[in-house]
Length: 245
Image 1 (cartoon, rainbow, N blue to C red):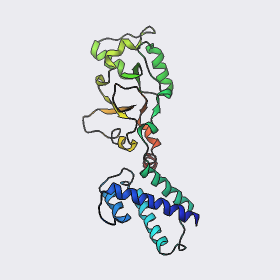
Image 2 (image 1 turned 90 degrees about the horizontal axis):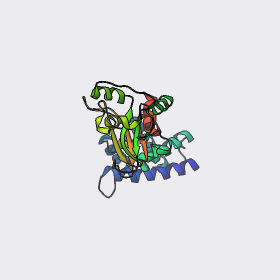
Image 3 (image 1 turned 60 degrees about the vertical axis):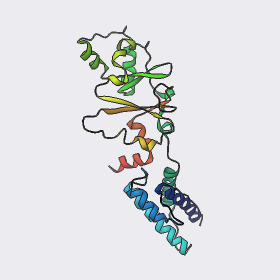
Image 4 (image 1 turned 30 degrees about the horizontal axis):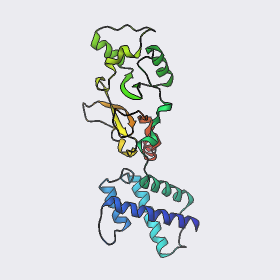
């Protein structure tokens, strides 16, 4: 019976949230009607998923049975836990900063850093690019393509242990990368809203290499963290999607 009580409590919370998301008005809006509206109108990134939608439909069937005869069935522990996690995903979605790699864990480059040391550390960590930071603000990106872009602009290249990041700063500004672009987002941006940004782009558009997180999404603000495609695995729905592909 404990499973029933917790399940019904979570169901009620979800029902109230779905009605709000659906935007449907009236004295009474049923769970099924709100769910269909949110799913088919793609009003929520979690509910729009077909597998999630079917799970929530099953939850609705269980709830209807319990409403008529409380002892007729008991949701399994596994289903109740799965449902609870989905409810939390929908009601309390993760924010950008929640999934970001925090600045304290990031590799960053400063203008005074030797290029060879930055490259060695990038290779060690398997990184394709690192932010160039000055006064805790992102002023550019040093990537594996920086040398190519430097050569394309200067017609020659010669690098030794004495070269510093500042020697390449002209080709590291965010807008100067030929094949990638870089975005900024606020720390409280709903993380699910970033899925499309790091997903497929329009034909001919630059690929978004990573998303830098600042307090309000302004690039002139202090860097708080970075989000790459690997960080998206911290989103339950993205992890499920990758697992099912």
